[in-house]
Length: 257
Image (cartoon, rainbow, N blue to C red):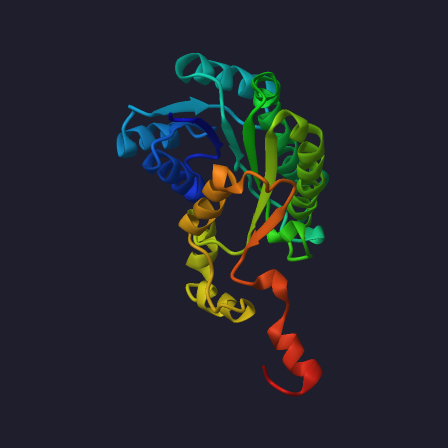
């Protein structure tokens, strides 16, 4: 039986890959994004038989709740929620003012909370559900974009709270923490520095960076019955970045790895 999957940030690089992966698995997808043209484009690309476009900004709790309610009315209650919407403004503290700080926290941390709140009680009532939040390695260590990183760090604690409070109802909650992912969000940096991905690869033990499909694979697994006893984890999907720093280790040991 097909499940209903809510994906936020659906028209972005990772969001589109998430929608495709769940559709390919036979699921019904509620594709939510603030970009109306973007989600309508998903209907053109994937068809509307099992995909319903929803338009709302996840930082607007009331508009978000209304959009999800419309999706539920059309397709049924949500079985899986993937809180993927996010973005970053301030690159450093020196380039972050109060408005940028508030926007990054509202979108990346509060937006995830608002998203889960639209389905939490329904999942409790039905005593089942899978919640997957999209965090970042920036929430695990300092890698720039301080407000974004602080918000993503908050998701680690929030995921654990969801896991321990909702587990009694058969609901699991997990966090996927991507490293660098080749998405359209990088385009401005690629335009400025076309070799950026090649240069970044040296920091990753696997010598590569992720594609959106790699993130979708991890999310689909955590949302699946195969992960039925996995909850409360923050899973880096990062080509080994969080495992350690080989270049620094070489300098410390004077014995190249």
